[in-house]
Image (cartoon, rainbow, N blue to C red; front, top):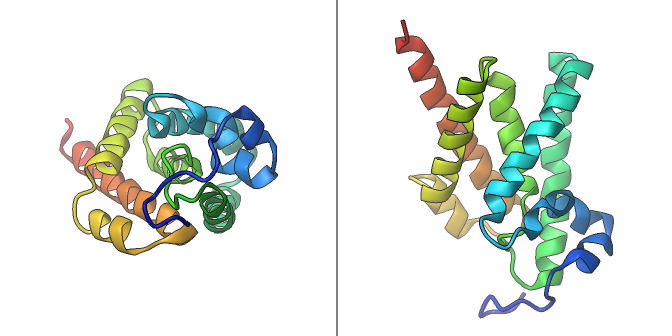
Length: 167
């Protein structure tokens, strides 16, 4: 890692396709978006969720998310080391895994999905305590993955509050 946070490698399609860990870290290319790669990574979670959720039992889906998180710790850390920037914006596997967790607990319907997406992006960007602490102090793959898990927790908490108080 560079101390100044400078990229050692300029990520592009060739970089993403050069190793399976980079392909996963960059959310199958969604992290290559020039603007708001985290938002594009979060959007990439929708088709993955829509494909996987009906094919897996709830227990299998949650187990898959645990495995995706564990794999994410490694692939995000590996890709960050190669890039020289631990939490490079194009690394979006963390958003994908965390938002699939949010979608799992989100009531069905477009409005709920839109609210879930908005809340998750809000908390991932604003990073209220303790998210900001972990984002700043936990480094490597675990740090990359963990702060998004906390953002998912905030999103789910607010979704449950909205659901509780709706008529």
